[in-house]
Length: 222
Image 1: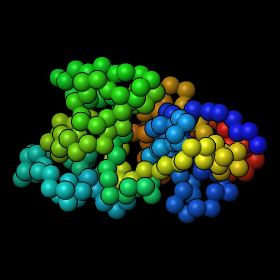
Image 2 (image 1 turned 180 degrees about the horizontal axis):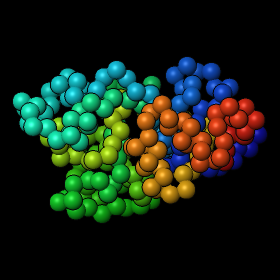
Image 3 (image 1 turned 90 degrees about the horizontal axis):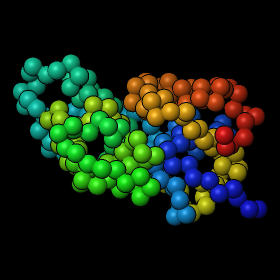
């Protein structure tokens, strides 16, 4: 069978009901890269019991201010956010999704759309996704967040989901996944960064005008 060639970079991938892997049941994955070498994404709706503050302490990042007094409401809320299970690959490594326009305004940089590289990015290791979202994997961004100087919107996950060349296309052909392309970057960012994790599945499906109960008869690519 000849599989349809698609590029799902920047799409949301929803696990269909017949996907029995317990790790991905009812999961929503944001696809960061998809090309001839395979695909990579981060699951966005699998919160853990660990919060940012606990993770920062585990990796010896000093909070600002150290005495935790006089914290802004925003910073206090950020520290209490749950760390996500981003996928089964490299679960000991952090992956941070954030809007590129939320990076520090004092640091200018240019985006190379199409190459997934950021010129003059303030972070050591960062790629751009569909020209409006970034994925950063270097510790410097967490150091900035710990000092209340990082992105104002972000998802912090441990691990990622990966597919070998042709694997994702094959799984979609087997009706294991439904892909969703949010209509605008604003809608995508609302789903990623503003929607409670327990509501992200239905929020993504709403872009197609369906709900989870309707998925049994829906084909995998839309």
